[in-house]
Length: 534
Image (cartoon, rainbow, N blue to C red; front, side):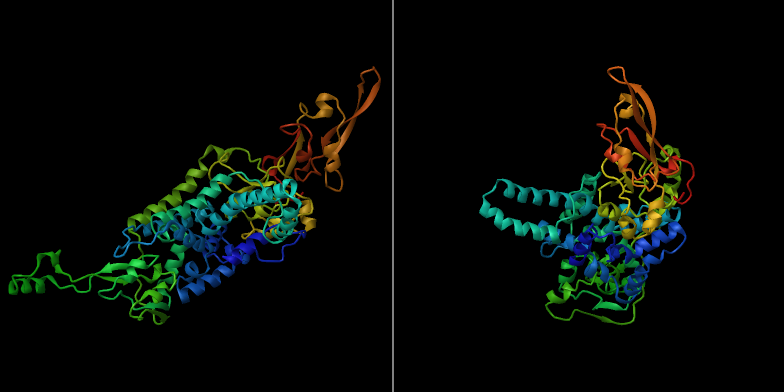
């Protein structure tokens, strides 16, 4: 958890144009990210090779990732302590929705196969990073800054002398570089909070019943050689099944007799209890079978075992048990994963011209949607806060994908941070030279709002801020008659389309109130620009 928080803070501008750390490593070690992106793009992205290492370790050690590494699992455990989800003595959880996580896994994998990327809506790291980046982090910075600013401006001098060094430390190591504002902040925050609130119902409710990454690790760990011993709960002691946070024990009969033998015993013993006859079989007291695929190796059972016989060690894998999902449920999830891509392609919004301003280096739109996992890293690292999550205005498929909103922030001419933190290379890594040449979109003037065109008032702000070496905004000099009848020269701006890269700075600085007089539209609504380079 500490490593995650450190990397989360390092995914920020620190005065350098280069991030020397693998701040996106949690996405790169996620085998579900590797599987979905590979299925969607039909190729393996070399940046995701650590996920193969994690998959191999799971085959060897079991589902240790969920218990030892996953930072979302740590937050869930902390929330569980707050909600007091410990089951009462003698009570065993009866909630069993484990098939749902396998159904969600099948859904995202089948959808990825048809280039519809749903992973960003259910992947634990995408949910965690978005919830913190869009929801928690801006609120945390806003509150802390307001408190220290209030003390500095209105508090007594002696108190300010004490708080200012503390604030400088917070600003250097904990607080973000800037105060950010994001679209969909409520949705991102409440999706993450909802996972914590599920702890009201049972421990690790999300991990047991909904997490598709957990489902993938469960499948991989079925043949692992690192296991709990013994594989059954002891007779007369039910601490294992009562206290296990993952409900990794299920009841199973320890004695089964054939019908023929049972009927012979009934003839010999008329007092045989009918309560022990089920479907023609006789059963004794139920034991609890250990399901290794559900175990996250928290090893808490070692601590509370009264006989001290519980342990973990290496050994030959047992015969794998069937996956905890019915055949019909699996087929239904698979069909849904096939149906959703078709439904998406028949949505009218899919046919509309695409004028979204994607980050510099973004793939062509269809490839971008298939490769982007909606992790939010690029939006968090954006210097100007111009990259924002797309809402539902273009349908559900591109929800949470990044777009540039120039009125909020422009694309800094020399910045390539977003391409450095993208874990799937949906945003191609760019050098500064390539960045300067990449065409994100094109600007155009609304002459009914532009001051020199509509009001005959001199204004050259957009041209002054245009960063390209040969200005993409030029002027046409026109003669107008002044208030006293004199002839004046007025510069009216126009866009040189072949020079414009669509960085959005002209729209950002336009002094016209409300909607800018110069606007930038994405390259998808222009002529085909190939990979974005002129």
